Length: 224
Ligand SMILES: O=C[C@H](O)[C@H](O)[C@H](O)COP(=O)(O)O
Image (cartoon, rainbow, N blue to C red):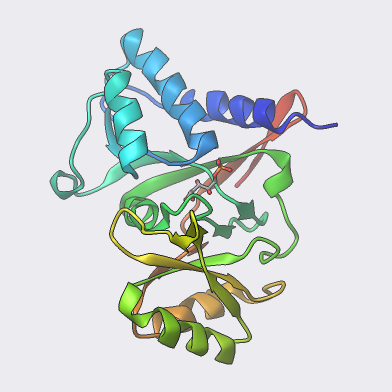
């Protein structure tokens, strides 16, 4: 029986070894990224001089509590390295993200990042993306319209709920979790999703990751 929590921790530790002084570092969101932020906090306590750019309010609060110096997104032209998690990855480094609803800021940060390091436990590695539903972030007004457009792409979408009400993202949007079946051409699907009016962003991360560090039992494996 695999210990996925330990695999996440191992991957996080390995990724944080890649940081050095004076870098601007994107701080991901989710449980794997949380382990990385805690590890970064330890290194900052021991003298590492970096500035972080958080991808969610939760990661921001955690970074502040660990005395990690932060920058606002509008004050950075580029980010040296980002450490973030994923819900699924393939070995050609395409991802599904957004299981925790933070995909929008994560994608902005990833787009500004020179080296996007994804950390994951071994359950996240797949041959084809799509067992995990693709989160599609939409403005609430357009959610019914977008759901119908997703059907035309063979996607079955459901608005994500919390306490029986639509979950509202940090940017005030809804998420439609969409089942496309197994996705053979994620780049084309990504492009098609971007053409739907009312879609703000989606959780397919294509050509954004540089490396995936995966916990694998008691060690890690790197895909690049
Ligand atoms: O919205 C959430 C993020 O994309 C997370 O990085 C992703 O869901 C992976 O989360 P975890 O590390 O908790 O499995």
